[in-house]
Image 1 (cartoon, one colour):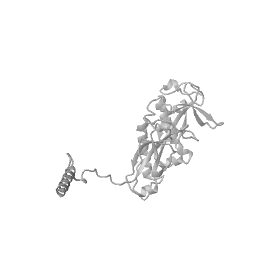
Image 2 (cartoon, one colour; image 1 turned 90 degrees about the vertical axis):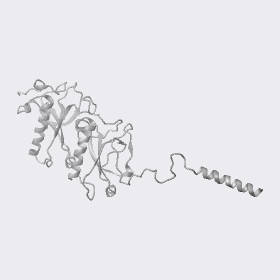
Image 3 (cartoon, one colour; image 1 turned 90 degrees about the horizontal axis):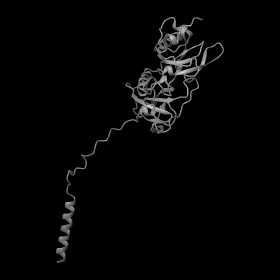
Image 4 (spheres, one colour; image 1 turned 30 degrees about the vertical axis):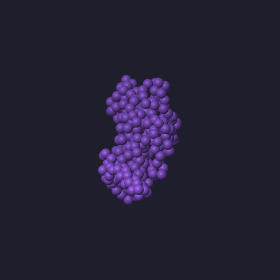
Length: 299
């Protein structure tokens, strides 16, 4: 009798076990065919639209990559990440066609991100590249980074900021925009420095726009600078609304602020242009002022 009951209990346990192993609704019992395929392994690629607490670096390694939300206090904002089309033995050199093409792309992408040319504000654009190790691992990206600076004159310092730069130059009243200026001059040498001031205060200069220089070697002689002044005079004429003719030089002087030789090598061709009133001061912006606001000087 005891043996019969033992056999019956064993049979019941087996039945319950087999019932528990039965397939539930929607499960086919195959554990290998319902998992998504893993993405193929690839090199590290940074993200766009994020910020960095640390200062800009020309080379970005994975170990130092620490993106944060732009609401956090930061010093760098990435506006775009592009891809080099051609492979080569290492990251492009500063004077290479590839890096100049990358800068041109970053230049255009930054304008779309900000709402205007970045040079119209207290901003600096730079291109960051993968490390040698990253490049050897297949990384072919370039990163377009913007930073805010306290001045666009010599000795600029990077500003720690909060909030994204997206659309930061869309509004004509943006605090980042360049506007009216007061010159600081050495004796008989013309303007040596430009200090931002409110247009309602007395001033003798004003940012009028950006002239894009042709892709030629960096100026080395006085004659090489002549096209820069001519280009900025044309920008000035459009800004104020006066004829771009031979009389323009008798209406206003011009201050030219080109990129430095190092930035020229990587493809920066944007020249900041300012009107300069060498004989008077004004207390209004001359944007759209026309011939009445910028008359031909007779003396």
